[in-house]
Amino acid sequence: MTYLDHAATTPMRQSAIDAWVEASGALNPNGQYAAGRQARSVLDSARETVAELLGCEPIEVIFTASGTESDNIALQGLYAASESNRIIVPAAEHSAVRDVAGMLAGRGAQVVDLPVDGAARVCDLSPLDTPAALATCMYANNEVGSIQPIAEITQRAAAVGTPVHVDAVQAVGKLPINFHELQATTLAASAHKFGGPRGTGLLLAQRTPAPKPVYFGGGQERGIRPGTVNVAGAAGLAAALQESLREHEREAARLARLRDKLRTFITAHIDDVVVNTTEPALPTHLHVSFLGTDGDSLIMLLDRAGVAVSTGSACAAGVNRVSHVLEAMGADNVRARGALRFSLGYTTTEDDIDAVCQQLPEIIETARKVSEL
Ligand code: PLP
Image (cartoon, rainbow, N blue to C red):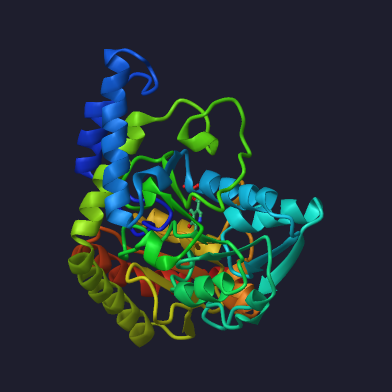
């Protein structure tokens, strides 16, 4: 199989599997006996590794079960910690953020849009000049890969005392990120995006303002994420993060070259395409609209040819809706319908790209014929 859906999930790195297996026997890290202390020391070491790699203190590292959970805890918790009901949310956020904002709107929050431009990049920061309970922004867009002006956003929000949550799920492990330098209040990441185990997430949370608990029943993870901690997951996450950041510069250059090769091939050999990914963007993402096709048919045709890709947009029961990201970018229906995301990762090789290039022109031709029927 040619796997080009790394932005959805990437295979576990061997270093993460080894760390996970080694820690899989760990018992309750809160146990007051030798086995508990042993588990605690594995957890502490994972926490320290993460803190060192992401530029924060160990106390600011909270292990969660997913990026979605981290986003939920941050947004709901920061909202609960504030007296304001104003929340600032860009138009192209992941559903893990958008749907929480929608839920908060149902409870009386005033959701203020942060407009994005034709590259899905936040382009008007003026709503940040009015204080709010929180502002949120993704570090890099999951569909088209565009990198957001995060430092400008955190600075502008800090000037009026608004806490900022950064959904860095697509960026952590691919770009060097320093939580303290970023001046974010909270930051979400997810292990399975950088080669750690699925079902393990991270929330970095400053001491103050801290999200109020949205779960109850235990004091673990500063009471912000109560429940017995997944020690093996934390160990696997830390190992994957370490490996991905150790090689990120080399990998970024290698993957950008492969991604550019694919883009050059597509624009040279296939008519009527719009490249939706524009720099600055993650080196792993290439999002393209093949006009006159339907993304779902393309996925099926490519799957039959042994190529795994996706549109990158939220899907309900396996059926893709038109992407809200492309809508926010101003794409018309034809461009939105024919959109496909190729996302590369550490296992991607030149052969993978060659295999796609070999199959793609014929598949697009077939998809166009099918959509004319
Ligand atoms: N935020 C962004 C930007 C994402 O891309 C994703 C996953 O695709 C998530 C949040 C959710 O992460 P998880 O799959 O760990 O719940």
